[in-house]
Length: 430
Image 1 (spheres, rainbow, N blue to C red):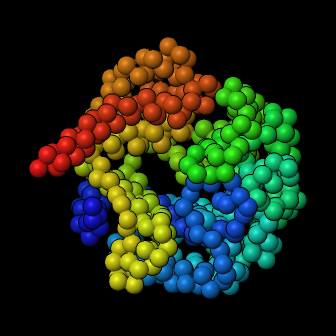
Image 2: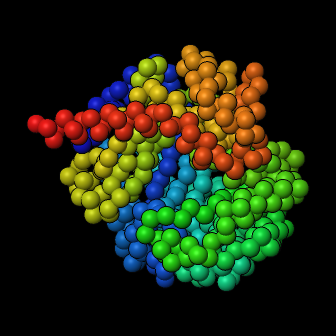
Image 3: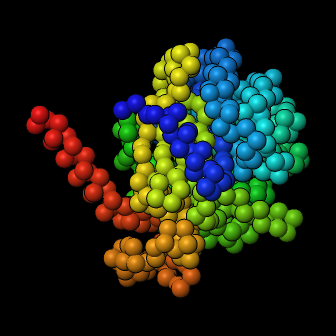
């Protein structure tokens, strides 16, 4: 299916006139250092192997070309956040960060000074020189994918980082006034409760303001899926790890913002940073995905569900489309209004509670009535609490968010499977 991007953008203008949306920007940089095993043993994201600075120069030129295709759509539109992800964005050389931010500002010239501009990367590539450049060009937040501090466990992924890389970066970010998040993963091969808690305690001791502590997703053709399943903690052990980590972080002054994200008070105030998967309302919010394999989400207005589409995840196809002055879009999905409701509901569930009145005001439907059998079952199992103004996840329910989302989506998935199966049958019968 050819995704009609020009037509989608025309529809977007109509939706924007009817109800201006918040706008978030995701910029993708695809390159990662080679590891053995490949892709850090577990990663399922599409990436390209880094082979030299020349690739980065070429890619930045590609970003500039793609930006020009969209420039008229978003010029003067204020951004709510910027996230530069990947891949490994801190692979860029120091002289390339001003160039990257210049490319971004040429398309999005209304970037309020108070918003978060985040760049993610791996611990050993966050040098002081780079952090100083970040501050100069307006990048005010870093997100560090440490995953494990324990050297033996980290080594299973082929990573060459050391714990001191993490600690030094956190300290340097604090000194320079940069916000900082560190990712850790639980449910890792050979990980025990003791090794997990030791890592968390060491990280908490740094005073880092944000910690993302998420469960390992084992799948696909990754090394962990193919060769290390027998080394994974059991389901019960992983669940116990989740609750123990939540308790430790809360005891140390962190509040839980989403299923996996925790924040510490800064100067006596909660920052309440909204992480990428989270929502605390049902306002129209657009996510512009820019670059290799980036995903753009354009919600519609009233009965229009909108569109979600993804750029090419093969670097040559991405490049070829831009050379032909075409949108580098590989695939997409036209949402119906029910799909939009589910999408926004899922994002609010990530933030552990759903505002019933806001949902009713947005969609003219009572959330509890819409999914009554599912909520009833979840209530019976103690996973949620239903109040007149909100649905709130219990401590146990916060761990089972993916399961809850699956249950809520089941009826819609069955409808879509039946519809597309019927289409395939009709085509084959001709």
